[in-house]
Amino acid sequence: MSCQTLPHEQHMDHQQEMMKTDGELRIVAFLCNWCSYTGADKAGSNQLPVPPEVSVIRVMCSGRVEPTLILEAFQKGADGVMVLACHPGDCHYKQGNLRAFCRAELLERLIPQLGINPARFCFDYVSAAEAEKFSQLTGDFTEQVRRLSIPVT
Ligand code: FES
Image (tube, rainbow, N blue to C red):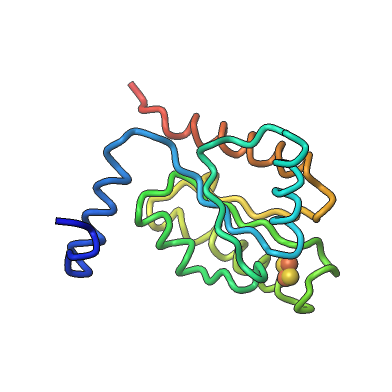
């Protein structure tokens, strides 16, 4: 049976199961189209290292990333979630990144209540010109999440 033929809830369980059993680290990165995504693109063009564990989701503005999307990513098995935005004052939609910053602060306080270490969440600013920062941030965050994911013996 293919995933498309499963009823919605079964499909979700199936997805979660698939995401949890292969042992790979998964980082979901929501990138603003106008800044961070372009920075990520430049990192690729410049052959800067970006961990393969990072899965990019391109959004038009960091302000479009609702907290429920972040929580859903964790629920579906993400080991870490990043939201990368335009620098303050550079948002193409005026205050989207400010909204995203406020939500990030809220989430950092909320997710420990859900049993998620807040170090598994990252909000930061990456401009279109900051390919090196993108490479550095994704590398550092992936390593941080990897350390958190090592079972305690
Ligand atoms: S357009 Fe980039 S954060 Fe709003």
